[in-house]
Image 1 (spheres, helix red, strand yellow):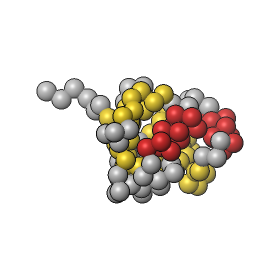
Image 2: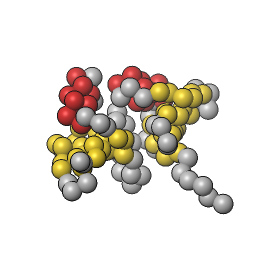
Image 3: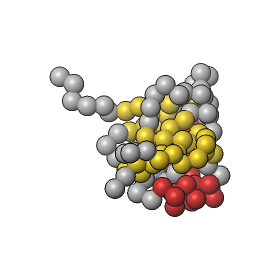
Image 4: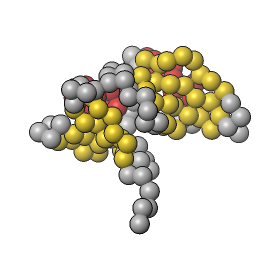
Length: 116
């Protein structure tokens, strides 16, 4: 029986660079890393992000990944200070506010702040 989603995976060109981005720049925990297997896992709370080093890296826009943020403006300001690249500006909707982030390989994901 399926009980939930365990992991979403991005293909990356350089595992070390990807771990630095998600671990140091975004401040998430690198839960597991195996350089020989070219694989790492980022602890995203209820869901892990897999990083697989591959020649097919970059530009993944089909997997939809959203990280929650409790202070989107402050988070964006802090991440910009760390050199994180964003696609567009913060967008507001009936359910909250979002902004799209691009990792060093061109994979895109969203930061989401729920509305009141």
